Structure formats: C-alpha cells, structure tokens
Image (cartoon, rainbow, N blue to C red):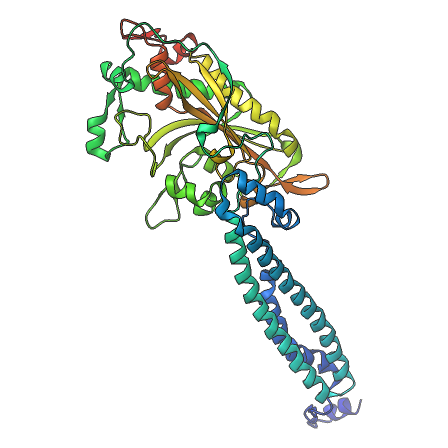
Length: 484
C-alpha cells in the first residue's frame, strides 16, 4: 500500500535486490537448487537405463530355460553331434549369472539414490547445506558406478548373445538320432516308382532335345550354375509355378509376392550364421541380401509385430526367385539344372500357436505330396535325423521324387518346424488372453522348378521321346497334352 501511494506521488520505488546467503537458501529456491545439484546423477541414470532393461538378444532358446535345464540342453547338443558346443552351456550360465548380479547391484544403487535424493531435499529444507553437499558426493559416486555397471552389463550381454546364438534349438522327441542324412528315416511312399523298359536320358539332354535348355550361353553370361530355359520347357516351368500357386490358394492359403531382398536383421533372424555364409549373396555397399527362399522375407514380414491371437493361423503361399551361393555344395559344377545359383519357387509359410504346430506340419508336407501326385510323380517322405537338422529347426521332413533314370529318389522339397526360434529372434509375438507370447513358425516347399522339372520330365517321358502333360497341368499349357 505504501508503494502504491509513493507511485501516485511520482516517487520512484527501488526495492533491494533479492539475495540469498549460501547458509540460508530461500524456501522458494530449494527445489530448483537441490535439482541442480542432483541432476548429474539423473543424467547418468537415464543414459544407462536402456542397458538394464534390454533383453538377451536373438537366442534360439530362452536363456532362463537353459539355466533351469542345463542337462536337457547338453543332451540336445549331443544328439546333434555338436559336442564342441557343450562348454557353451556352462559359459552361458556364468555370463547370465554375472549379468543378473549387475542388474541387482544397479537396482540397489537406484534405490539408494532415491533415498539420498529425498534426504538432500530435507537437509536443504532444514538449512543443513554442508551435510547436503556431502550427500551430493554420494549421489555423484552412485551415478558413476551405475555408468560403469552399464558398460559391464553391455559387455556381458554381447558375450552372452554370441554364446546363446550358437546353442541349437531343442529338437522334437520323435526326431531320429543320427549324424548325417544317411540316417534319415523313410516314413511313407506315395505312388509306385516305375523303371521304364527304355533308357531315360539325362534331364539336360531331354530339355535340349526340345530346344529348351541353353547352358553354354548362360555360362558365357553368368558362369556355372545358371541357365536359359526356352520354348515349351520354359512354358512348362511357368505352368508348374502357376499351377502350384492356384493349388495352394484352393487350399486356403493367401497368395503373396514378397521382397526379393532383405536386411541383415531379417537374415540373422531366420537362419544361422553358417547357413547365411553358405547361401546368401550380399549386395555390395548395402545392408541387403538376395533371398535364398521367400521364407526369409515372408517370416520377416512380421518382425517386431504383435499379432492378435484370433487372427491365427496365418497361412501364406509365396512366389519368388531364389539366389544361393551353394558354397561347398556338391554338384554345382555338373551340367544341368539340379544344383544352381538361381531358381524360382512356390513356398508356404504358417504362423500359429504352439498347440497347432503339429497339425500344420502334417498338412503342409501333405500339400506338397498331393501336388506331385497330381502330376503323376511318385514321391516319398523322410524324417530328417538330428544331425541333418539346421540349428533353428525343431524337426524337418524331406519330400523326395522318384528318378527313373537314377532308379532312386532325390530331394524336391523340405517341410520344417522351427518352434518359436525365428519369432524369438524377430520379436514376433501373439497377443493372447493371458498376455503376449512368441509365435511358432513353419515353412515348406510347394514346388521348386527347374529341379522339379527333372522329376516331371523323367516320370512323364514316353518311349518315343515325347513327354506327356498330366491333365491337371494341361490348362496351364494352353491345352497341350504333350511336348514333342
């Protein structure tokens, strides 16, 4: 009121500046002052927070399962004849224990920091600045230790991820134990294998007779493992792919054409490093790889997604060209189209709940068998043994077609169940009534020409050198009943 009177009389009112003695801070500034003192500790904390909340990255199995069931994991490694990996179990347990110890120490430090921060506020309120400054030193020491723990935990996680990445998935109990594919077990035959009373030429010669194969030009253009298909053979190739597409659509699968290149995080999510090195072509200067099968991009489609449980199962059939280095593979130098660097394939992929996986596993390989039988090609199925399974697979079944020329069966497709390994790596989750859980994935070859054409030509070859076109395929060949 005195100030207002003075202003009205034209007098200038000058108030003394607000000054606060360090020994007696103003109450209104206490909160700001204490925050400024302890802010560095919060900064350290928030910078290190992601380290403490991050999960073990991309294992094939849950590290907690390994810690609780080390003997099961060791026995599984032995069944896969990978005894050199046995020490990894103890190494994983040790690293995980250290990781958890760091986590516990970090939790204790955060709790301690919260208590100290509250105490600092009280000390300032009571004007005990000297004690508050001493407590500030504790907060800063706390923050520095948190930072060191963060670095230590990051290092432990990197080591643990590498170890867990190398430990194979747990195989199904019914998988036969054997060291390599010679121990695979025949399950069933479909169709009677026939050896004709005339000589069956090599598949490349059959194709060449119809002016349908040019390997020499392909060699000049791209080297070994490539081909030109022409005329009726090229048309037959396309007819088989189109027929397979429609065959799968009629069986309720959704047709898809995926990207033919994928990023490295997709590649490492769907296969092992060993498989990647032997198969994948990398685009120079880019984080991109040519797909070896459309399974890669089809499973990758769901990376870091949460899928509603009621939308399951997701049943997809996809077409793509496929590119493979076939590093170390036998037969890449052979004349013909049996083992090549580039081919086309119709694939099927299923995402489902764990309890539905066995049902879809059986349905998927039966789809391939039915397709081949509709084209008059005898086939058989083999259960792959433990040593023949890739590390991500829970179980796998090969479909083999009959070769009248060789008088034996050869592989034309493979059906695989991978449990939740791919979903765990790619963070593909299902939203269920009781929370989120990892999806289970399966894949299977519908048909993969031109290798499949070998079986087709040999089994439908006539004595006069012509090739019969099965009824199911005739509409896709413009009504043709034979190739002459």
